[in-house]
Image 1: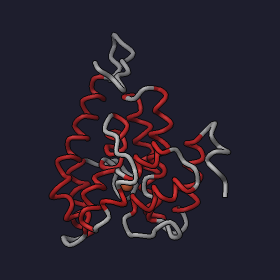
Image 2 (image 1 turned 90 degrees about the vertical axis):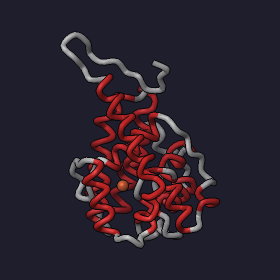
Image 3 (image 1 turned 135 degrees about the vertical axis):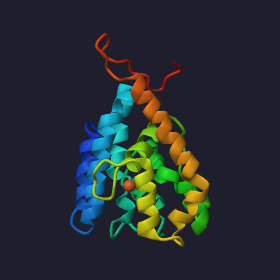
Image 4 (image 1 turned 30 degrees about the horizontal axis):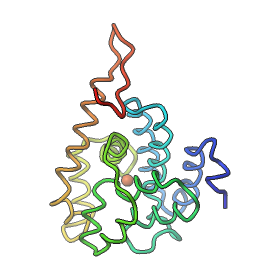
Length: 205
Ligand SMILES: [Fe+2]
């Protein structure tokens, strides 16, 4: 297996290839969604510092690999994906982003895996928000969507007893807040007639 360390010069290329290898054939719809999330991540990357762009896009490619046969283990895909990535040498930062993406902590509570998920650091900030935004604003077919449409689709597809749906009672506000923060930053970094836009990632501004 190709190692991310061997591809350290361009980790998002490694992430893309790894996600394709794990998802494209066995889970084509999950792969379509992943491609859409990576596209979204590239679109919102302007809110980040330049050194964080590749981390975001890598995490976007890898965020759902925990569904792949051979990676899935506990049934909590964020944990399984992060553990796989740690085993193959991916940075702790990307592992943490994958582990905690899109309200995973509340799902972990639902399935009794909170302690296991806590093996990975959950770092609040623009990187985390940008990944959640990219996932929440992309439908299962990879097309852009709205947060409300996405939440309705999750409820419909999974049903009321699914842990992800039960966890929405806890994490829906957190999901909305992340999306709102990214929208606000995107508006502030929108290039205008008079300016080429301001990068505010990692900002105090
Ligand atoms: Fe996703």
